[in-house]
Amino acid sequence: MTNKPAPVSCNATLIVTSHRVFQPDLNEHDSVFGGKILSLVDDSASVAAVRLTHKTVVTASFDHVSFLRPFHLDDSMFLEAYVTGTGTRSLEVFVKIIGENLTTGERFVGYTCFITYVIEDPTASDPLPDVAPVTAEQRYICAGYDKRTAQRKERRIEQRGLNAHVTVSSPWPM
Image (cartoon, rainbow, N blue to C red):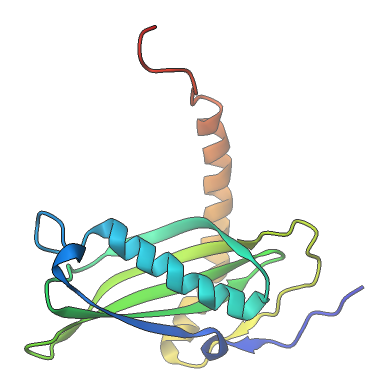
Protein backbone atom coordinates (compact mmCIF):
# COMPACT_ATOMS: atom_id res chain seq x y z
CA MET A 1 0.00 0.00 0.00
CA THR A 2 1.29 3.45 -0.93
CA ASN A 3 1.41 6.11 1.75
CA LYS A 4 -0.14 9.47 1.04
CA PRO A 5 2.56 12.01 0.15
CA ALA A 6 3.16 15.11 2.25
CA PRO A 7 0.86 18.05 1.54
CA VAL A 8 1.93 20.49 -1.15
CA SER A 9 1.56 24.25 -0.78
CA CYS A 10 -1.04 25.87 -3.04
CA ASN A 11 1.76 28.26 -3.99
CA ALA A 12 3.81 25.33 -5.32
CA THR A 13 1.08 24.84 -7.95
CA LEU A 14 0.51 28.54 -8.65
CA ILE A 15 0.56 29.60 -12.28
CA VAL A 16 0.53 33.28 -13.25
CA THR A 17 0.18 34.35 -16.85
CA SER A 18 -0.64 37.64 -18.51
CA HIS A 19 -2.38 38.59 -21.69
CA ARG A 20 -2.87 42.00 -23.25
CA VAL A 21 -6.23 42.48 -24.93
CA PHE A 22 -5.98 43.22 -28.65
CA GLN A 23 -8.60 43.75 -31.34
CA PRO A 24 -8.77 40.07 -32.47
CA ASP A 25 -9.77 39.08 -28.89
CA LEU A 26 -12.96 41.14 -28.99
CA ASN A 27 -16.55 40.20 -29.71
CA GLU A 28 -19.33 42.40 -31.11
CA HIS A 29 -19.68 44.12 -27.69
CA ASP A 30 -16.04 45.28 -27.78
CA SER A 31 -15.19 43.03 -24.83
CA VAL A 32 -13.10 39.85 -24.80
CA PHE A 33 -14.95 36.89 -26.32
CA GLY A 34 -15.89 34.40 -23.60
CA GLY A 35 -14.51 31.47 -25.60
CA LYS A 36 -11.13 33.18 -25.73
CA ILE A 37 -11.18 33.53 -21.93
CA LEU A 38 -12.14 29.87 -21.45
CA SER A 39 -9.31 28.78 -23.73
CA LEU A 40 -6.74 30.90 -21.86
CA VAL A 41 -8.06 29.61 -18.54
CA ASP A 42 -7.95 25.91 -19.47
CA ASP A 43 -4.49 26.21 -21.02
CA SER A 44 -2.99 27.84 -17.93
CA ALA A 45 -4.92 25.96 -15.26
CA SER A 46 -3.86 22.63 -16.72
CA VAL A 47 -0.25 23.58 -15.94
CA ALA A 48 -1.16 23.96 -12.26
CA ALA A 49 -2.79 20.52 -12.35
CA VAL A 50 0.19 18.83 -14.02
CA ARG A 51 2.59 20.65 -11.71
CA LEU A 52 0.96 18.74 -8.82
CA THR A 53 0.34 15.37 -10.49
CA HIS A 54 3.28 15.11 -12.90
CA LYS A 55 0.87 13.15 -15.10
CA THR A 56 -1.29 13.83 -18.12
CA VAL A 57 -4.63 15.28 -17.04
CA VAL A 58 -7.85 15.93 -18.92
CA THR A 59 -10.47 18.59 -18.23
CA ALA A 60 -13.52 17.02 -16.60
CA SER A 61 -15.59 20.10 -15.77
CA PHE A 62 -15.72 23.85 -15.45
CA ASP A 63 -18.02 25.06 -12.70
CA HIS A 64 -18.89 28.16 -10.74
CA VAL A 65 -17.87 30.07 -13.88
CA SER A 66 -18.38 33.79 -13.30
CA PHE A 67 -17.76 36.46 -15.90
CA LEU A 68 -17.79 39.30 -13.38
CA ARG A 69 -16.62 42.26 -15.40
CA PRO A 70 -15.67 42.58 -19.09
CA PHE A 71 -12.14 43.02 -20.34
CA HIS A 72 -11.70 45.67 -23.05
CA LEU A 73 -9.17 46.74 -25.65
CA ASP A 74 -5.83 47.64 -24.06
CA ASP A 75 -6.71 46.03 -20.73
CA SER A 76 -4.29 43.45 -19.43
CA MET A 77 -5.50 40.17 -17.99
CA PHE A 78 -3.47 38.52 -15.19
CA LEU A 79 -4.56 34.94 -14.78
CA GLU A 80 -3.77 33.11 -11.55
CA ALA A 81 -4.49 29.40 -11.10
CA TYR A 82 -3.67 27.01 -8.26
CA VAL A 83 -4.79 23.63 -6.97
CA THR A 84 -7.40 23.87 -4.19
CA GLY A 85 -8.23 20.23 -3.50
CA THR A 86 -7.41 16.67 -4.49
CA GLY A 87 -9.28 13.40 -4.73
CA THR A 88 -8.14 9.95 -5.80
CA ARG A 89 -7.52 10.70 -9.50
CA SER A 90 -9.05 14.15 -9.70
CA LEU A 91 -8.11 17.60 -8.53
CA GLU A 92 -9.69 21.03 -8.46
CA VAL A 93 -8.01 24.19 -9.72
CA PHE A 94 -9.25 27.69 -8.86
CA VAL A 95 -8.74 30.37 -11.49
CA LYS A 96 -9.13 34.12 -11.30
CA ILE A 97 -8.38 36.79 -13.84
CA ILE A 98 -7.46 40.22 -12.61
CA GLY A 99 -7.97 42.93 -15.20
CA GLU A 100 -5.97 46.12 -15.33
CA ASN A 101 -6.82 49.16 -17.36
CA LEU A 102 -3.41 50.01 -18.77
CA THR A 103 -4.31 53.70 -19.12
CA THR A 104 -5.65 54.35 -15.60
CA GLY A 105 -4.00 51.53 -13.64
CA GLU A 106 -7.37 50.45 -12.19
CA ARG A 107 -7.41 46.75 -11.27
CA PHE A 108 -10.50 44.56 -11.00
CA VAL A 109 -11.59 40.94 -10.66
CA GLY A 110 -13.08 40.05 -14.04
CA TYR A 111 -13.46 36.27 -13.92
CA THR A 112 -13.38 33.29 -11.55
CA CYS A 113 -14.05 29.57 -11.90
CA PHE A 114 -13.15 26.11 -10.70
CA ILE A 115 -11.91 23.40 -13.06
CA THR A 116 -11.78 19.71 -12.28
CA TYR A 117 -9.02 17.73 -13.95
CA VAL A 118 -8.71 13.95 -13.95
CA ILE A 119 -5.54 11.94 -14.42
CA GLU A 120 -5.87 10.38 -17.86
CA ASP A 121 -4.34 7.02 -16.89
CA PRO A 122 -7.14 4.95 -15.28
CA THR A 123 -4.54 2.67 -13.66
CA ALA A 124 -2.86 5.53 -11.77
CA SER A 125 -2.97 4.47 -8.15
CA ASP A 126 -0.50 6.72 -6.35
CA PRO A 127 -2.46 8.98 -4.01
CA LEU A 128 -2.41 12.67 -4.73
CA PRO A 129 -1.06 14.92 -2.01
CA ASP A 130 -3.39 17.24 -0.14
CA VAL A 131 -2.83 20.94 -0.71
CA ALA A 132 -1.91 23.37 2.03
CA PRO A 133 -3.27 26.90 1.67
CA VAL A 134 -0.91 29.76 2.48
CA THR A 135 -2.87 32.99 1.95
CA ALA A 136 -6.22 34.06 3.39
CA GLU A 137 -7.74 33.71 -0.09
CA GLN A 138 -6.42 30.15 -0.42
CA ARG A 139 -7.66 29.18 3.06
CA TYR A 140 -11.16 30.43 2.24
CA ILE A 141 -11.29 28.73 -1.17
CA CYS A 142 -9.77 25.42 -0.03
CA ALA A 143 -12.24 25.29 2.88
CA GLY A 144 -15.09 24.97 0.36
CA TYR A 145 -13.57 22.05 -1.54
CA ASP A 146 -15.65 19.30 0.12
CA LYS A 147 -18.90 21.19 -0.52
CA ARG A 148 -18.04 21.75 -4.19
CA THR A 149 -17.06 18.09 -4.56
CA ALA A 150 -20.46 17.01 -3.19
CA GLN A 151 -22.19 19.41 -5.61
CA ARG A 152 -20.23 17.91 -8.52
CA LYS A 153 -21.19 14.39 -7.48
CA GLU A 154 -24.87 15.38 -7.44
CA ARG A 155 -24.49 17.07 -10.82
CA ARG A 156 -22.92 13.91 -12.30
CA ILE A 157 -25.95 11.90 -11.16
CA GLU A 158 -28.28 14.47 -12.75
CA GLN A 159 -26.17 14.42 -15.91
CA ARG A 160 -26.57 10.64 -16.24
CA GLY A 161 -30.35 11.11 -16.15
CA LEU A 162 -30.14 13.80 -18.82
CA ASN A 163 -27.83 11.67 -20.97
CA ALA A 164 -30.38 8.84 -20.92
CA HIS A 165 -32.81 11.15 -22.73
CA VAL A 166 -30.44 12.79 -25.20
CA THR A 167 -30.71 11.40 -28.69
CA VAL A 168 -28.01 11.06 -31.31
CA SER A 169 -30.46 10.67 -34.18
CA SER A 170 -30.44 13.22 -36.97
CA PRO A 171 -32.58 16.29 -36.26
CA TRP A 172 -33.27 16.75 -39.96
CA PRO A 173 -36.14 14.92 -41.66
CA MET A 174 -34.85 12.17 -43.90
